[in-house]
Amino acid sequence: NFTGTGKSSFVYENINNAPETLTGNLAAGQSVEVRGGISQVPDPTLSATASFTNAGAIKLDCYISGGGCGGNEYLNLSGATLTNTGTITTASAGGTAHLQGNIINQGGTLEINDTAAFEAGSSASTLTNDGAISIADGATLTTGQTIENGVGGSISSSGSGVLTTSGTFDEGAGTTDG
Image (cartoon, rainbow, N blue to C red; front, side, top):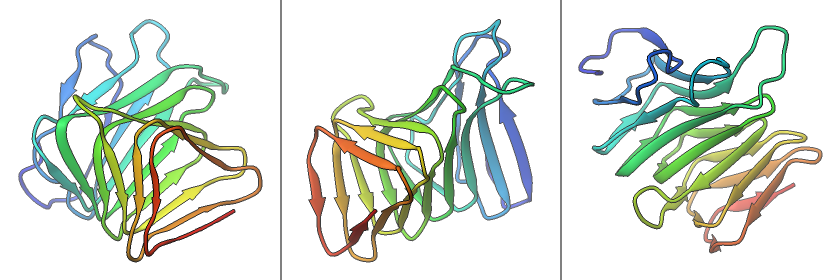
């Protein structure tokens, strides 16, 4: 539960086999990491049932000491909308980071560093990009939902980074390269 702007950092690993609910807004200097890879527990799901803003950092990561993971991490917005003015990073190391629900990237950064999926939350979802989406070399962002690349939006990939969509892609006033 984020109620203030004090600097803080949390890691959620689903050790107790129970999804967690995020409440409140993340301020600059605050971060949440959803970390998969603990073999004895199911994949972690961090849910938000009310709309919120991220001005800090959200990371979906899969980690096992010695490398390799194969697990998945979920950020489920359950009909809520995440407005991102900070950073969202996916680095799932062999698994898949799942972003489920509506996201407005409003001047923030979405960094795809491995395999990520933008999926429906409780209904069809839209990723509105008025910030930067960066897909690293070898990384993939896959979706069957709607992506709108709007004013100030930039979608770029380096090397073999790929955006794959079977949904609607609307190239508005933004730019796309790579």
